Length: 201
Ligand SMILES: C[S@@+](CC[C@H](N)C(=O)[O-])C[C@H]1O[C@@H](n2cnc3c(N)ncnc32)[C@H](O)[C@@H]1O
Image (cartoon, rainbow, N blue to C red):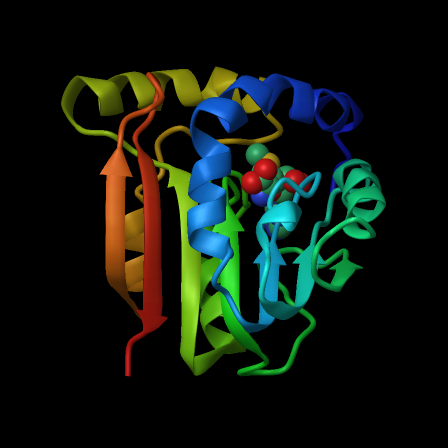
């Protein structure tokens, strides 16, 4: 995978106001109660790590070496044991049913192939496991129109991020049932989906 050194260096500073206003609270709400083996996909610089409180171990996968360097530095200070890997979402080097929870936060907007990423998540998740998602997503009406037009340029400056992905539909199409979903609009350019889902039996 291409390394994004400038994006990685700027990421924590760039997102700090959003973290304070919205994201940190959402991260804590979704992650603090997770137990057992947790896989976080596209863990970035490790913004989620302080919020895991009860997991036995977090496997934090990050294919971009520039992001991974920061993630690794932060892993030692996490409240639970963290193992860092370089796996891409579309090809996870883990056996089937290896995890109690799989976490995507602000990642399904950026992966090359969301369909394959979610299929991999479903494969490595135990049948009673939980998928955790915090993602900005496609809006409706004029907002979606703008998102389609802005995404090609936006993507260039944000390491491949798409504003216009219908992530809830992709989760359901990948064989999950959404159990809780909160879709709010704290950002101007995209609604924020906070969801938990389980593999469909
Ligand atoms: C916007 S950052 C989000 C980082 C972190 N999850 C967070 O919540 O702050 C998107 C992350 O997705 C990672 N990413 C992009 N494509 C990926 C892929 N195919 N597989 C796994 N991670 C990917 C990027 O390297 C980057 O670290």
